[in-house]
Every structure is written in structure tokens, then in C-alpha cells.
Length: 210
Image 1 (cartoon, one colour):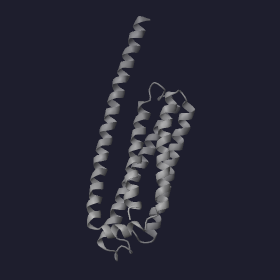
Image 2 (cartoon, rainbow, N blue to C red):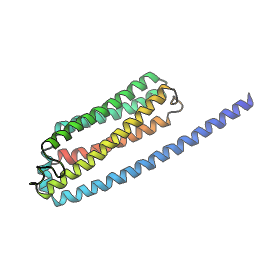
Image 3 (cartoon, one colour):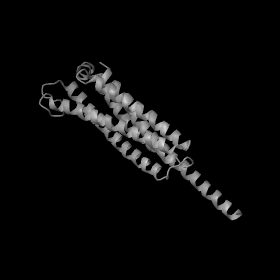
Image 4 (cartoon, helix red, strand yellow):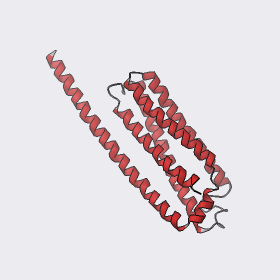
């Protein structure tokens, strides 16, 4: 029994070191993502200073209601991601799975809204080299270029986050994630929170500042 206890202690210590390293690795990764989007935000700020009037006119063509709904969806999904982690730590496996499913559904609804929003803009010719763009001033062309690049990159991160959360859902189901081994789910939650935070900045920059 003594030997078994020693082996269990060693195994626990090994998991603890892996958890710490995993968490640090995720924070470093999130930092690189912040640098990426931070550079884009700085670029946006520079162009907005140059083309303030054009940016204001272009922003008024975006659907604020759709942007607001998407903001609510992501904020809600961020909450359910936190609650899912809390649930698994309280040994509420099934509830944790339901919350993860709801989080993923919110992400899917966000992408569907974004798809229809983009489709409407493209249908009306407001896309790079589109027919309506030829007669627009340079500032509005730049605005829509940044809009598609930044919101498109963000949408890609939403897709990656949904895939990440889907794997976590499977891990919870197979009990590879449990109340005393939930670091993977916590890392997935951190990534999803980053996706939400980025949108919180994108939403006012493109939809609200007129």
C-alpha cells in the first residue's frame, strides 16, 4: 500500500506540473493573438484619423441590430463557458455538457448572423473590388477592407474556438476531463473569452462609432 501511495503521489505531481505548463502555454498563445489584433486595431485607428468622415458614413451602412445580437450571443456564450467549468469542478458532468453545447450553439448562431450580414453587403456590391466600391471615396474603401479582414479573421477564431469546445465536450463525455482534471476545459474557456473580448472591441469600432 505504501508503494501504491508513492506512485499515486508522483502521478498527481506530474499532472500538476503539466497543468501549470499547459496554462502558461495558453497564456503565451493568447498574448500572441492580442499582438496580432492589437496591430490591426492600431492600423484601424490610423486610418480612422485620416478618413474620419468616410469611416463615419461607411459605418452607418452596417446593421447595428445584427452587431448587437452577435454581441449578446458571444457574451452569453462566455458566461456558459465559465459555468461549464464550474459545473465539472462540482462533479456535475451532464450539466457541464449541456452548457458546452449551448456555448457552441451560440458560436454557431454568431457565424450564421455574420454569414447573412456579409451576404447582404456582397449582394449590394459592398466588397473589395465590388461594383459599388468603384464610386466610393478612398476612406470608405479602406473601411470596408478593414471590416472584412478583421471581422473575417475574428470569425475564423470563432470557428477554431467551436472546434476546440467540441473536443472538450467529447473529453467531458469520455471523462478525460473530470472535477480534478479540468485544465483542458479551462484553457478552452480562456481561448473563448479572448474571442469574446476581441469582438467587444470590434463591435463599437465598426458599428457604433458614427
